[in-house]
Length: 471
Ligand SMILES: Cc1cc2nc3c(=O)[nH]c(=O)nc-3n(C[C@H](O)[C@H](O)[C@H](O)COP(=O)(O)OP(=O)(O)OC[C@H]3O[C@@H](n4cnc5c(N)ncnc54)[C@H](O)[C@@H]3O)c2cc1C
Picture 1 (tube, rainbow, N blue to C red):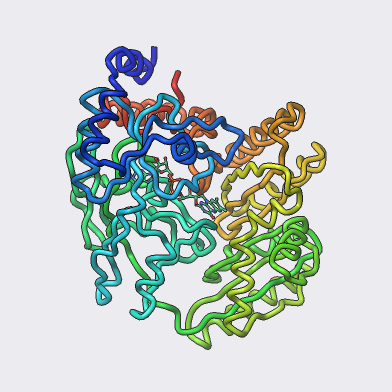
Picture 2 (cartoon, protein in one colour):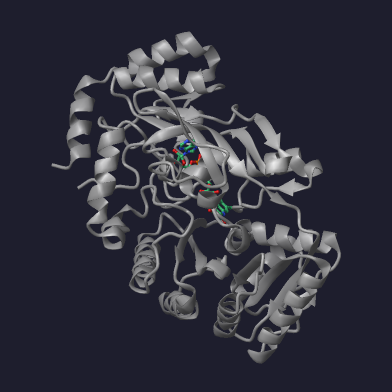
């Protein structure tokens, strides 16, 4: 029996959930809630995975409170599930073994901004948009932008990225240090404010992407960037997906420092036209943005136009006015909801993979052919500069045949990406939905991950049933 399964069996025999909820209500009053609707919302899942609500939700306001809740739960072997804004896509916040959801949304203070050092310290519940509004007047910005206005703690926990990652990196690059509540309720600090360090194991990066399975992040020190002097961008249509992907590959291979380069297939463009009132040609399209000096962005734009031209793409439609650019990127960020508009009564199952850039065209083309062969309604959209793309399948969860087809498609997509030297998820994370690919992706290294989990959370109480397969 796997280590986690043994720990769970033991825990089940020793739990007093009702007693812990009583203690939490006594201590946190109405900040500890057990209503069905709230519990269900905190076990929210945007896949076909069944909703598995926690037994109670507690709204923490300080690191010490988080530690107190974790200690109370640990004493009774009760799982704890960290909750940011609940926008994760693979059943991450489900509570398959019940337990207490610790909602960090009230920990939403920006604690310090060090403009001279281009960094800041925030509580885990601060969202990416909140941080950017807070620092707008400093001339700095925080570039990582998943489609949702997620919490920075949740983004660190899923190692999130977004449209700007091709230029500014992902959460693994943005996080300099963390405050973490560990499985026994201790509080530790990892990393610091130095831009680099050779001092010991990199615990910051261990917690980034650990999806709440090793500890709960309560504060983050984050790297910021100067707002670029000049921004230019626009949209460029292509005759087919292959030409669009080849343009991306050439752009990256030439070292053109694009800030954003996003692919929308024709179905996604159609959806965005309808949802965001755009009038783009309904053909595979790249959304682009260049950051730098006036001369730099001009040069980059010209170089990209030449690449597009060579591949039969264009004409490049410039969005020179800031409002037009904002409108385009809002449409890109709303792609998920636009996709839903193609079949409003259906659910969206969003999945992502990432491949080495040279395999991008091949992977996207095979995926498009697969969608067509299966008769699925599934737009493709992606942060293709990183080799990362998403498929949003519109599916009737109550139709077994549609479900079978969709699940089989997701599996083929994950395996296709892995066979091309890629990963089964570039940014959404593993949660429950991608566990079955962990062995194929990591091989024997999975045992080392299990050993780390066992060392840091021996009773398997931190968001159990996530990332690591159970047998
Ligand atoms: C429309 C839409 C578009 C999206 N686009 C993108 C995209 O472009 N790129 C991308 O990367 N993602 C994207 N996502 C996914 C999602 O926004 C990310 O996974 C996000 O990083 C999750 O943050 P959250 O605050 O919602 O975390 P939650 O969903 O609340 O939690 C996610 C996981 O992290 C854990 N967790 C949360 N907070 C903490 C904490 N403080 N300490 C430890 N663990 C914690 C949870 O237990 C859970 O396992 C999108 C989602 C939607 C709905």
